[in-house]
Amino acid sequence: MSAVAEIERWLRRWHLIGAGVDNVWYYTREVLPCPSGRWLARGPNGTGKTTLLEGLCPFLLNPVHMHLSSASGRATSLVSLMKDGSTGKRRFGCLWLSFGTPEDPASGDADAGEQHYGLRMEYAASSNSVETVPFRLPVVPGHDGQDLSTMKRDDFCAWVAAQGGEVFASADTYVADLAQRVFGCGPGTLKRIARRIKKVRNPGLSPADATAELRMALPTVSQDTVRSAQEALAAAEATRRRYERDAKTAQVLEDLSAAWSGPTGLVVRGIFNFETLQVYAATTLPGFCRLTAPEESTLVEQQDAAAILTNGSLAYLTYRKVKDAPEPADRITEFFIHAYGPEAEEVAERFAQCVRVWDREVRESGYPPMTVHPAATPDNQLPPGDVLDKPSARLVFQWPGRIPIDALSSPGRAPSAPARPRSRYDRLRGPRLRPTVDHRHLRHCGPHPRGRRLRPSQRHNYAQSGPLGELGLLGRSPRP
Image (cartoon, rainbow, N blue to C red):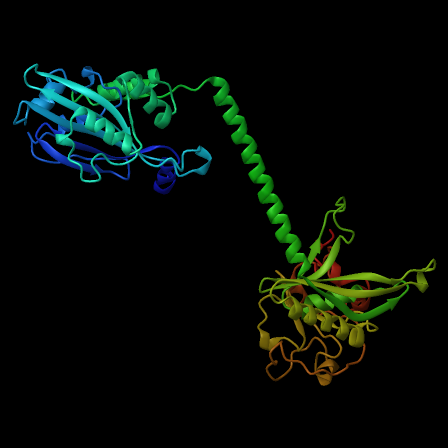
C-alpha cells in the first residue's frame, strides 16, 4: 500500500491525534500532538519516557492497574505516578488520549468533532491512595487556561459539563463509551485489545511472540466473508476489463469516424480487368502493400485490397457500385479510397492520383516493357524505369508516360549516360509495348519459375503468360 493510500485509509476512521498529561509524576503540563497517529518519546534514560507511555496506553483504554507496568521488573502504579513529584498532601492530575473524527461523510461521525478520553486523578498522602474520575471532553483538557491541578472533584465535574463533555460513573461505562464511539466494538473487545497492547509493549517480548500477540489481537474474519470478498473482487476485475475493452472499442470507433474517404474519379462500366493497376501501384507508390483477410473471414467483404502505409497513416483502394443492373455490362463501379491517420488526406490524394494516372496512361496498354537484371546490378547500369528489387533480381518497368520516349527505343539496354534518379521522370506518353526480358542477364537470376530457361523465341509468350504473378510481384509464391 502506498503512503498516500495508507494516510487516506487512516483518515477514513477514528484515529489518534494526540495525548496529554497535566501534573502527573514529574510532569507539569504537556500537550503531545501526533496528527499522523504515531508519537515517539525521545530523551536520556531516567527522564520518564516509559513511565509516561505506561500511564497513557494501554491504561487509558482500560484503566486497570495491571496495564500500568510494561514489564515484570517494573512496579508502576497510580500511587507512584501521583506521589513521585508531589510537594503537598493532596495532588490533582489528568491523563488523556485525543482522537480525530473520520473524514469520510459515510461514516456518520464526520461532524462529531474530536474527542478526548482520560482520567482525573486525586492523590491523598494520608491514605496513600488515588481516586480516579473518567471523563470525555470535546476540547483539550485545560484548553481555556483553567488550572486543572487546583480543581477539586466537584469543580472539575462542573467544568466538564460546561464544555459539553461527560463524567462517567465508573470505569466500565467509560470503556463502553470509548469502545462504541471510537473503536466501533464492544467493551470486551476493547479490553482484549488493551491486554494485547500491554503484552506487545513488554521490552522482553521476542519478535515471534509479538507477531503472535498482534495476530490474536486482530479481529478474525469468517471464511464466508473471505469467500464473498474474493467473489466481489473477481467481479470487480471482470467489470474493469469490460470497461477497458469498451473504452478501446470507443476509441477505435472515434478514430474510424475521423477517417478520410473520397472517390478517385475512376468509374468503369460492366466487367473490367484492372489487373495492371495493382502492379502499377506496387512499382510507383512508396510504401505499397496489400491488405488481406482469410477466405473464411466474415468481418469484411473484400478479402484483398491494395494499400500504402507511410508515417503512421494508411490508405487502401476499394470500390463500390454506383449503379446495379441485371446485366453485368450495365453495372457501373467506382474506385474509392479510404485513409486513416495523421496524414490521411495526403496519402489518399497520392493514391487517388496514382489511380487517375493509371487510368489515363496505362489502362489500355496492358503490361509495360520489363527487363530483369541480376540482383547486384548497380543503379547506373539499369535502364530508365521503375525498379522493383527482388531477392534474386532487379526488375525494371517502363510504364507509358513515366520514362523518356527515346529510352523506349531500345528496351533492356543500359543507356550510355548514367541513369537519372528513379524518382524523376518525364511525363511523356510512350508506345504501347509488351513486357520483355533482358536475356543477357537471365542466367544470373536463377531458374525460370517453370523450371526451364526461356528461349528468345518464347519471349512474348512468356510475357503473355503473366510473368508478374509468377515472379511474386503480387505477393504470390512462384509455381513449381
